[in-house]
Length: 328
Picture 1 (cartoon, helix red, strand yellow):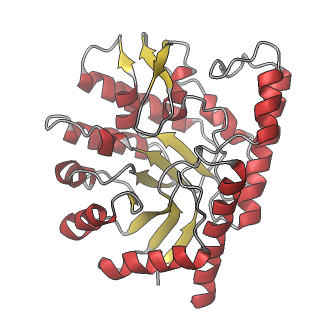
Picture 2 (cartoon, rainbow, N blue to C red):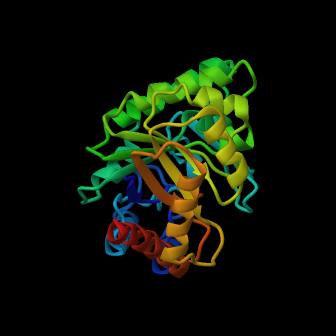
């Protein structure tokens, strides 16, 4: 019997009231927040919003609770854009999702900042799931003006993320988000380095580590190298490309655990719990052997949704896991 865990990849939309309050606060500009430099009113607004999204997950019955990453205006690039040795450049479009963020330009050594750890310290839950960009995606989204070559930069990013993890509070699960493995897969001589970088980050935590990929399926060669990484689960985007995801699993195998991206993180149509449960069973029927654990999640971040639809999708995920318990 597969243990179903209802969760999300994080990166939530700000509550509407928080958008209004933060835009009105003197000196606040979207994307210009650096931990430690925020005024008390801004910090209080984020804490109230954080508590709200944590409560929403708990009320929905999710098995893992994320901090929400509400301060991550630059999405996956956030851990770099807040760093003192990184210059945030102009607006760029990272992925084909109609959202634009700033270009982090690394100009000095990437020492740990404690920024993400401080966010996690503010969450009161026994079911904490930490979220970080994977090292390959973070390196892909940044510009290196310090380390000199792709291999050295990827190594530095992995070390930086591992050092950040060292300061995290106790957490049950770590989701490493790696959409660049799909959108801009590594060249032949970097495939193995990307896997080694993920290994380095995963080794820095005692929690279960899920490498969640999305915007499609990972190319075969990259996926084969990803399988070499010592992680507990790989995540698949069954919304965007179910066939190619199933092909990778059945051709190259996968871990004993899996993350199933079954809920559309960009579409306002809310899937019913029964639909989600049917999709879980469909994936299980198409793959062998049974998984020890399946993280049932949205395929992408939920940042793109209106707040009410985001909350409805949380509830659907929680209800789908509850249905599984009833069926068992």
